[in-house]
Image 1: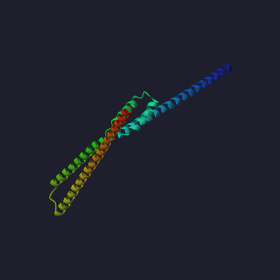
Image 2: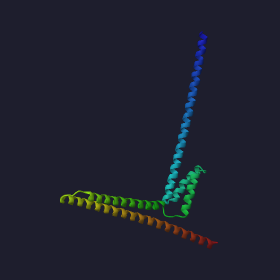
Image 3: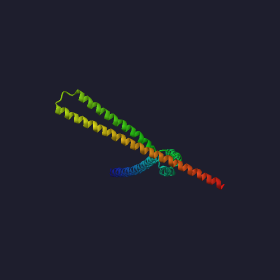
Image 4: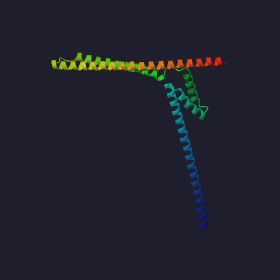
Length: 204
């Protein structure tokens, strides 16, 4: 009886040891897996941020900085198709520079803002007119106060309209300046390339 109990105790101790060892292996495996997953997640996030920054540089016309970032991605992974496409786009844009995309976008946004502002002004004037037409007979003092309020509303609407038009004109002028600068830079580069080609031909 005592011998059987001793065997049972030894078996239990062995089983506990196996379970503890298995638990340690499982914990270590889980830790390695989590660490690997987090590392991959950070790399993917860094790649995504780099692509977004390169896209922003291209939009602003800063092609060289975009190419520098994309080259780093391709050095790390030559098979990164998204980085390759963005690099080709940046190279094409640098060879044929046009007005920065954000200038065109600013012009479009300005037109929308002006249209929205004018629509709000028109609605405010319409509401004021309807309120005046539907008002009951007022005393001279009330009529004068209402007229002053109406005049103030109209003046505010006119000032808002003038401000919106001035901002639109300023943004349009800025977009035109950016476009002209880009065209001048393109012409300068083209002339420089032509001069280099001429000098090279003369040396031959």
